[in-house]
Length: 237
Ligand SMILES: [Zn+2]
Image (cartoon, rainbow, N blue to C red; front, side, top):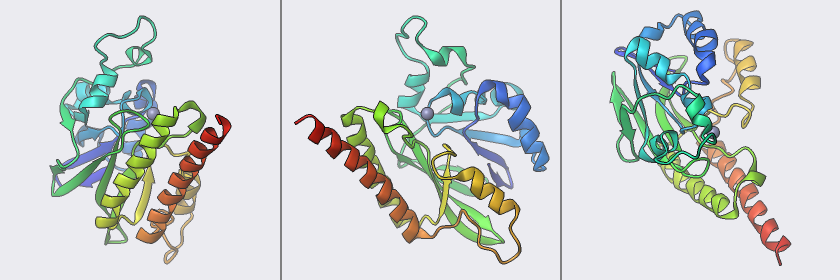
């Protein structure tokens, strides 16, 4: 959730059945009015990320955006009968088509999308400013990490390493120093949130890692994926 003087911008929206039980009460607990969510940007078009968006559209007129490719993923032209898991979820209507090179600007905020195909054809990373103790920082949210390499084809893994390299070009240029995820099991988000809660004044914010470590982390992820690609190559010889 990103706050601006003109309202709120949310990245991803969880499952449909968690909106009223988790997201809306969670916002209220933070003192944020769910009716002020003006935009929802989707890191990718899977149900656990878009499922809550329709509720916001219907109740608050929130505008929902993702890439053309992931709108297509959510609304396939020829859905295979009974195989389209997304059809069982409330799908948001297509408001905005996001694309790299077209920042989302609102309330003095600019969110930079970066195309990172791999987890889905239209996955996006988002780079945006945040504040920690009044100090401006640049955050990066890689919205399409692959959690189970073994389920992905070798070509898919190759595309993923290219996406990481492509993302790092922009992340380095923009000096991303805050590491965020929409797949919280990827980077220990729950543990870091617990740390954040227990933080004493003067303790470092566990999400601020600095640009060098941020880039290093993604290079290690890429090396692991490349090792898996090499292992498959060796196994097939
Ligand atoms: Zn997903």
